[in-house]
Each structure stands twice: as structure tokens, then as C-alpha cells.
Amino acid sequence: MVEQVRYAMIGGGEGAFIGPVHRTAAAIAGNCRLVAGALSSDAERARRSGDMAGIASDRSYGSYAELIARESALPPQIRAQFIAIVTPNHVHAPAAIAALEAGFAVLVDKPLTDTMAAALHLEQVAQRTGGMVGVTHSYSAYPMVRQARALVAQGGFGKVRRVAVRYTQGWLATAQDAAGKQAQWRVDPARSGLAGAFGDIGTHAFNLVEFITGERMTRIAAEIRAAVPGRLLDDDGAAMFHLAGGGRGTLIASQICAGDANGLDISLWCEEAGLHWRQEQPDRLRVARRSGPEEIWRAGTDGAWLDPSALAAVRLPAGHPEGYLEAFANIYHDFAEAVAGRTPTHPAYASLADGIAGMRFIQAAHDSSVAGNKWVDLTEPEQ
Image 1 (tube, helix red, strand yellow):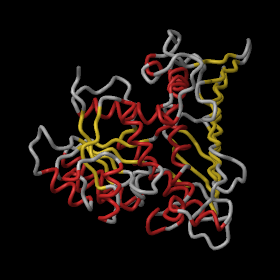
Image 2 (cartoon, rainbow, N blue to C red; image 1 turned 135 degrees about the vertical axis):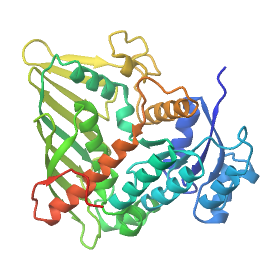
Image 3 (cartoon, rainbow, N blue to C red; image 1 turned 180 degrees about the vertical axis):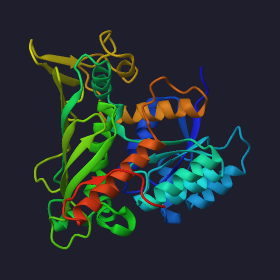
């Protein structure tokens, strides 16, 4: 039996949504174990949260600085081997940089950071230290998303011509909706950063486009806005974009679409076929060829027809839909394997380069909108 990889967590304590998701997913993964944490920026809440998460009291810390300092002082066979960061965006860069400087691998929730400058600083530190950084773009860890990527990459459908991706939610449709803990920091520029909805869910849509097509987005013309009066960050927006291979696309990211729960879907049309995937039906991929019958591809452990990259992400027999938790479990499993020196052939976690690309998307969308929806290149900004 392979020994479990030890990890620590920063953030994700009392009242948090994403922290329990990560910890549950890591337990499902089975090859990693939570051994330490600083689960809140408030020391007392952090220790209370650590108790609830089953962390030993002597390894439940009151701040991420204390966690990094004290874990670093432990013998190598005891201390955490990687650190998961599941805080509001403004903490991502300082916590990740401190962890990298201390020799820890880092798994960061998306978006990578709060600003482009912070992302580039983090990139510089990772390059200097040689530390490993993964980003939790969970939707690219779904089996049928990986199957879609494989089908496009095989070339039988021809070049990608058109993409339409939509991520709509309704949980911030009114001013009152921003009162809860999960919403407060997302509408606060000091904690969320440059973007609201385009950073929170637009980066997921962006990542899906680049992951499935296998191409970088090169240009964007965006209109983003705060539809709810008085809100300081965007809660609604849309963009047109160009792909490196010549394809064109549209992207919608909105959190004010009343009645929508988690409406993420993507369609892309190649020269010979269209592919269609919906997050709310995660185990189904629809393929419609230019001629011939429509195909429904399904996930399942017996799926000999699936690409190895998709089959590696499947945990259950056909007819048992796998989704959000399993995708995060795939990320934790593969990142832990990489930390242990057993990097998977098809890693489920996004790379640091993917995280940087997501931040360029946020910056370019913002710049385009401010400039009156002008086309902006997704290139590295001046330093």
C-alpha cells in the first residue's frame, strides 16, 4: 500500500463552503491525509475549526505564517508535504509565496491570485524556488470534459471553428444576496481583487475553453458590469474571443440570472462535428456529426471506449453520475501523486501556466470593458 501524502490547509474553516469540499474530496482521493491547518484568519476560530476538521490541537495554527513556520520546523517524515490554499483571493499570493519559500508544494484554489501583478510575482517565486504549484480548476477534471478534449485533439473532427460557453448563476441577483459570508468577500475588491463574477466563475468558463480546444485564447472584447446598483465588482458580463487556431467564440459569466443554480455548459463546433457538455448532466457528452446519427458518450469504469485521460478520472460504474466532489478528488489524488514523485500521465490539476492564463483573461476582460468593449490581446503585461 502506498503511504498517504500529508497536506495542510489554509482557510476553509467555520462557515466556509469550499474548505469542506476540498477536505471531503481529499478523503475520497484516498492517497492524501490532512495533518495540519490554519483554517481561519481569526486564531480562535481557526483552532475551533481545526477541532471540527479532526486536526490535532498542536498542529492547528492561528495563522498561515504560524503554520508555515512550525510545520517547517518538524522532521521531514512528519511535516506536511503540500499546502492547500482555500482562502479569499487576496490571501492566495502571500500564502503561496510564503509556502514556496519554505519548500512546500502548493495547491491554490482558482483564480490564482487577486491581481495580475500578484500572479506574476508568484510565478517568479515558483521559478526561483522550483516549487510545484497546482490550481484547482475543477471542471477540467470531469471525465467527459477530458473525453471532449481527447476527441478534439485526435483531429477527426477538424479545426475548431466556433465555441459558446455559458456560466450562469442566480445567487447574487439582489443586493440582499451579498450579505452572507460566501458573498461578502466576492463583492469586495479588497478581498476578491480586480473581478467579481468574471474572476469567480468566468475563469472556469475560460479554462474550459482552453482545456477542451487545446488552444490559447488570444484576443477578447468584453462588456462586464455590476447589474445590482451599488455593487463595486462585476456580477454580469459577456465577451467575444479569438482562439490561436483561428476559431471564434462567446463567453457569458453572470451571477444575477435569477433561477439558475450552476448553469455551466459549453458547445464547440469543429469542421465535421459539434460537441456539447453540461455541468448539471456531467456524465454525458453529446456529439453531433455533420452527417450521421447523434451520439451520447457516457462515463463509467467499464468505458473501454473512453480515452485513457477520461477513464483515469472515472470512479464509478456507468449510470452513477460523477460530478463536483469526484472532480476535486481527482485533483487531490493527482497532485498528491505528483508531490510524491509519481506524476500521473494526465494530471487533473491545472498548472501554474494555466493559472497565469486565467489572470490574463481577467485583466484583459477588465481592460476591454473599461475601454468601451475594444479588442484586447491576452499577452503578458508590462512589468
